[in-house]
Image (cartoon, rainbow, N blue to C red; front, side, top):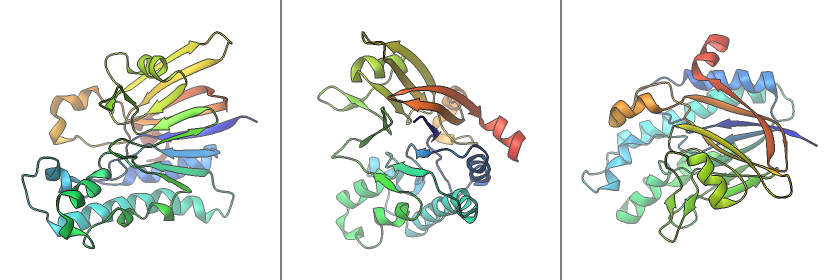
Length: 253
């Protein structure tokens, strides 16, 4: 039996920007009634912990709480209207992205923060059926209906993210299966057919963000913002539909 997957790439809830785009998701879910909803990771932007990547600034508790509160508001706005219908919910999966992983890195660098901050603060289990956390230093994976999902997939012994100019094609050739990732905020898509006639889909899903990230500068112009709907998903094959943020705003804003 075929399924419908809704892919929500990297929402980046940020305390300085509105979460109104979460309302669009709630309305879209009620309209298309997907069987599966997949949050690709970086649900929370966590700017207060960005310094821990370089160890250049002390932890600021009030900023951390604002980051968490913004994330929780996004999830509430996305899921509360869906739950109010009192109908069967889609199977909901969320990935730990590198921005959520900042919490674990901060605790590793400064163990004295244990109890003040923690991964459980994201309350993912209140909103999702499965939480796919990092395995060691790389994102975890989950295969659903023949498609392998991850915040990003790695290649080589160094565990570097698969990317490049033809990222979707690289996913297929390095993983030998249908794959979908987020992380880069760009979008790319490729299809190949194996010797048995099975179609392999590589998808880089973009970002679900409607604000300009100061740290990225002109790279913001390269990003694609929206969601991807996969219809008729069976054994890794599907019919993709891209819905831009602008289209969602026009329909639901």
